[in-house]
Image (tube, rainbow, N blue to C red; front, side):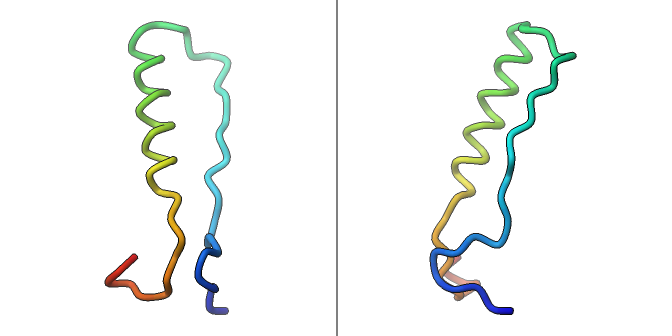
Length: 51
């Protein structure tokens, strides 16, 4: 099935891992991961060269 423009093919649900400590490196990882996922949210045009 072809997706319509603006329709995401999948979602990236955020999971909290309780075993991670609140160390500076863990906080940095979470911040970078959140930014990466936010940057991946686009309105798909259906044109692979544009998307």
